[in-house]
Length: 123
Image (cartoon, rainbow, N blue to C red; front, side, top):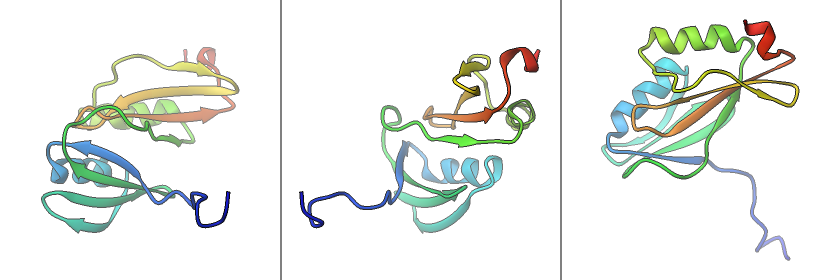
């Protein structure tokens, strides 16, 4: 494989949904992202943490499931619930920590991870 045929750095994770403006608002207001590029109504690029999410008009589902590290998964869950985000299941144990799954307004799955905590710690 040559440098020309090897993939480079991750540019963005594609997230699809029927209304890009609703998705952009969710990622900006609920997850603290910054919109860095917009081409309404079909596209927006939102930076959440150090990851660019490419929001594209289309049918939601499939694709990658971004996971973000958080300092407190319990505090983050309360934040999501205060914004009306439904948490379909509870916390899940992972090696060395706990994760929590949730969805954006288009049904795309997301998750947060906290390391150094157990399910027992969360009660």
